Length: 122
Length: 233
Image 1 (cartoon, helix red, strand yellow):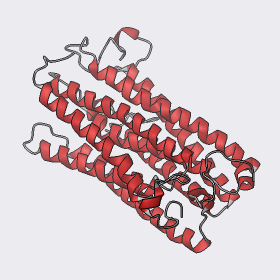
Image 2: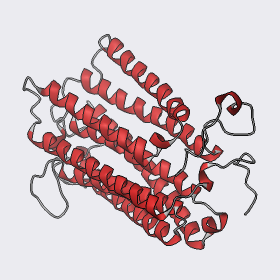
Image 3: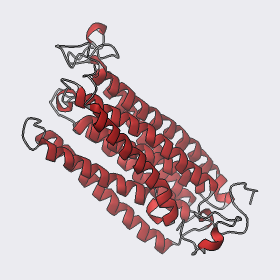
Image 4: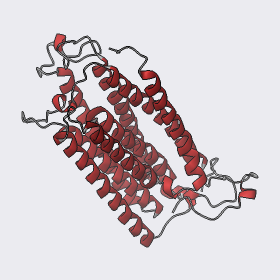
């Protein structure tokens, strides 16, 4: 094997760890489950987008909230399963997610807080 | 599977000589890059929400995106939904490529990565069609430049075509995402060629497929948010 500079010596890191045929089967089953979930949620979003799109009804805020929740659920499964973050070490998971969520929540807070003070933009 | 090899004693984990997070340098740097990229897209979408909330009128997506190739039927959001689905499917084929890589199954990686590239190309082609339809505007004619959708003209708001944040956000958000898809397809294709040559088989692991996989899933992830915040709410 060629020399690599991205590994620290004497350790059994992720790339060296392969899985067996049986483990692969279980993993593929999980992948198809997540695929089904993502497809169903997307289909539901489309259906709602087409039939529940009246902005004038008093329930538009609830529909909007449902869209956002569905999106976050989809994002959760993509990041945790497809991007494998759910199976990494807990410290790495927190290290990646907490700072990001903190900044985004802060940005949303700023926009909501200061947005009322800005004249209509074009 | 990757990641959970053994329990690390936290007292010694940070003493040097090993990665406390139990990932390789390359994967961690890919995550760092994705976090910064996600902040860029987050900024874009939050700005979009801001512009939308403070604008007097904002075109409804169902009334702008109802075209479908080869038909004149009114099919609101169906084409965008199809694009979303294509991207999700190409994300699935990418995880399957990564999974095949963990079994050192060269043919499997090649097959699934190949389909991922195909999915990406179809998405890009759809994006091109979407853009040309959007630019043509309500009259459906690309040739009449004066009433096309551009950065300075918004035909979807006939009363005030000078109020252009709608068209600007469309071009910048979907364009920036589309450029990510383009580079993703390019990188996936290069890795596909190396898989075909047997480079990773010889190296003993398919970590490179995992790394480009992270990027490709990220592209899909961003589209999930663009779809919600540009087309649905």
